[in-house]
Length: 466
Image (cartoon, rainbow, N blue to C red):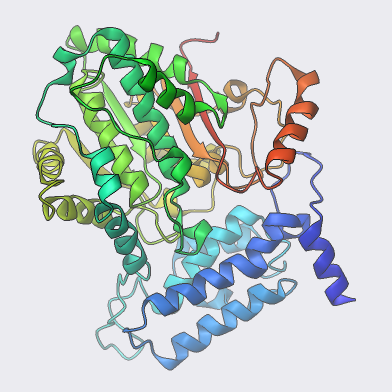
């Protein structure tokens, strides 16, 4: 009976788009993620740290956690491991001691899983239970995986040629006409979006950049907006299911005019993954400054390890240091280093980004910071899910209406490859076309909602209701 029930949950998704948060009992990808994907992530993470001698009690706790996840329909025995006060509150809020792994909201569960790994390690404690120095205080279980992902990019000659062929010291602002500049920025936004495919929490550390979107970068000797460049833009955009890129560019052009009037313009990235994605974000940030769309950029990072490859401040610095070690990437590395030194780029962290809460529950301190940022760029799947409380929503809900609650000064953009169920904004004005479009997608890729092969580039400007 247990096996039949398990097979049914694997094969059938019980979604009715009723606005409630996803849970494991909804079946399909969410169920599989709990009982198969998370245990694989933990197993792979232990293996990647093979040179580390974890204490027996830590390994036993990891094994017990894996066993609970694989069973699924059990209440966790780890709630007493949690020492951080905020997570104690959230455990009660989400009724961890009363619900099984399959009954707890999936977004909470996923964040909780990563937090439990740190609690088991005593990541937050300088001393162990015997008042000895704790060797695992602030130890990043995922550093090796993140470093390898970056190394794979920087040792790939094709990648280096495509992404670092530009002379970054040349002022493209004076060399490109308006149409060429706009097409170049569109390309950079698309590459920032597709960089989100390189997500180690989805691929269990085995992901390689998706060849379909591994297109050539601009060559400064040929920036004339010819048919080749148009084809690149077409290729980059063909799998973007909700695409507000033109609105983004129109907004940036207005920011450029404000910048020319000597107004302070701040753009912020709420970062997602290290490696390929962060590199693409750095390129985009560089040219946002070079083309005078802003004069300051803030990068928000995670406060501690989560989702395997998510960027912490130390990962940001590690990435720039690695760029400085390679002759072909050194120039760009120095540019990044100087941005930080001059405080043109600023790095911030907030534990909210490690929380299981939606953006509707944003803390006052972070809300105050966002209120001073002109343009917020939210990267990745988890940030998108956090916008909508990871709920089962109807596909034709209007993105702009649903995101309008967000506390920001002016505008927000979500760049996300689709790797989970929550998704809105499809054919907002063409309800009759939804079924046929979904059918076409499923015929092409039955896992289109989880594969990361499709993306969204959604935009909302609260000062423009059109």
